[in-house]
Amino acid sequence: MRSNCASPRRCIKEAFRAGLIDDEILLDMLEDRNRCSHIYDESTVKENYERIVKIYVPTLESILKGIKIN
Image 1: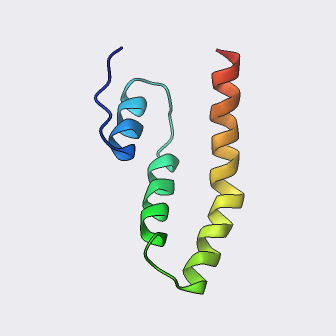
Image 2: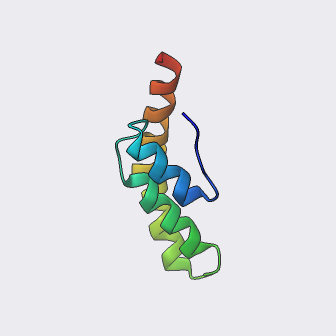
Image 3: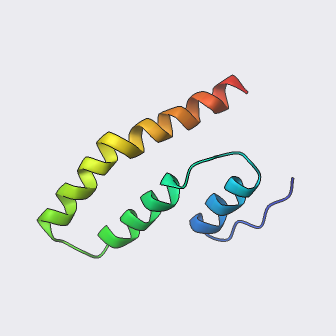
């Protein structure tokens, strides 16, 4: 399969369409990253930290496990 991934968002969407990932959490993760890259608000950082620990890390671990199995 040939891909036209010119940006992280496009790559995530193409992987989703191709059935390589099945979760929109990665798009949420990308949005959080973009939002925090220019905001230096402590409460926003704490909220993102909670999502990283509780949602994003387990999601990425699951994707990695799926890649290793296949």
